[in-house]
Amino acid sequence: MYAILDIETTGGKYNEEGITEIAIYKFDGHEIVDQFISLVNPEKTIQPFVANLTGISNDMLRNAPKFYEVAKRIVEITSDCIIVAHNAVFDYRILRTEFMRLGFDYSRESLCTVELSKKLLPELKSYSLGKLVRELGIPMSDRHRASGDAKATVVLFKLLLSKDTKKEIVSSAVRLEPKKQLDNKLLRIIDTMPSETGVYYMHREDGKIIYIGKSTNIKKRIIQHFTGENRKSKKLQEEVAVVTYEKTGSDLIALLKESEEIKENKPIYNRALRKTLYLNQLESFEDENGYINLKIAKADSEKTPITTFTNLQQAKNTLYKITETFGLCQKLTGLYKTKGACFLHSIDQCAGACIGKETPEEYNKKIAAFMKKNSYEKQHMLLIDRGREIDERSVVYIEKGVFRGIAFFNLNYQINNPEVLKSLLTPMKNNKDAQHIIQSYLRRNKVLKIIELS
Image (cartoon, rainbow, N blue to C red; front, side, top):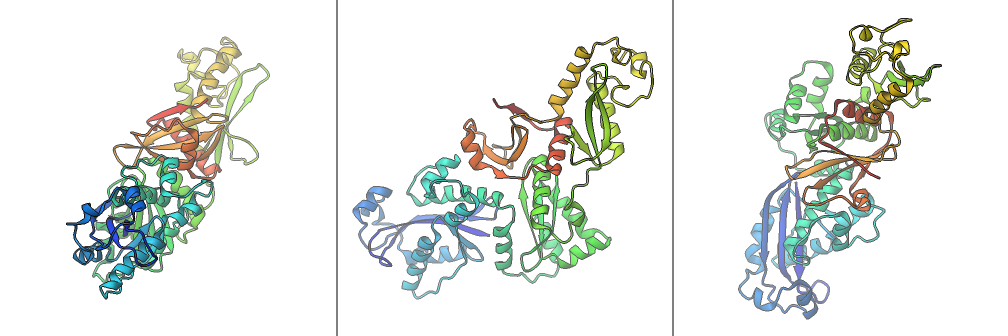
């Protein structure tokens, strides 16, 4: 649990500043679950330049509660939380100083979004909150007011969590989390899981990730793990201390994140998925008559496939569907061995490429249509799908046939600027697994929209 906060002060000498406004949003890693916002009477005068910057005047604070009157609420809302702030050294120091004046030793773990941004967004020019959120397209209101700055920091922190493919932030939080000694840890974990699409992470007590999975219903999948009788399920039930999760909305994003993060984190119980397991691929070649043929072949890293398959049966089933959908010839797709006409021609479902009745130019146009829809080689496009919330969409970014990464954007914010989109992206590797996942989605036509870029 995180307490994301921002503090406005009077300004003045080091450790003599007073708090004029505080905003705290309690954030569970997915949504805000509690909040506290209040002006504070600092019992001292605000520096003129600070008053001009924030818009908070001495008159506004005359009847505001003093710090000791809000201290109990601050302790309660930040209990068992990690403090998160933009330039956390400043905000945490101010907060500790105010509590020290009351004779209370206020101590919390803290995270700084400036430092996290420098690590996870190294390409940006500035890390001030105003410039950072503007460059990332994060909406912001009431700049230099505690509530506006803290709310923007929540959105920024959520973005940083999604970019942290090594899961260092979440794993550290698990390690620091107070261990609750309850009778049935598995039931407690299940109660906290959502019935939504996403990726889940099983942690040991020290925070280390031991298993990563994905599901269109995380709660249901966790129940299956915790009621399973096989050796692996028993091991997971015994070792798991905490399960964290990341909602994705889109099954495509969940599949891509699972594949990438298993390779990144190498959990001990994900051994089978650490390597590429696609055994067959679809290739094309031009025959002596000028017709483009399709064929199923064994996976070969030296060749660029149209698409890949986990097994031969899946490959054949898919190729039958492709042949029917695009009006192709069974002989030229390798599904019907014959020297004459294919079976589909005998029932008027093949235009006769198998016997030279349909010209190579006419037939190859159908192949080109299939290739465009089922392969993203050399294509520059965005695959738009569902997001984590109703007003959000997810993006898979393909640049000149290379998978670059994923992002989420608000429907109220247009992503026409490629530079803004690149800043939002969680970069991912363009490996065989990612290509297979995306191509499978393209041939099943499951994304909401495909935007072709120039």
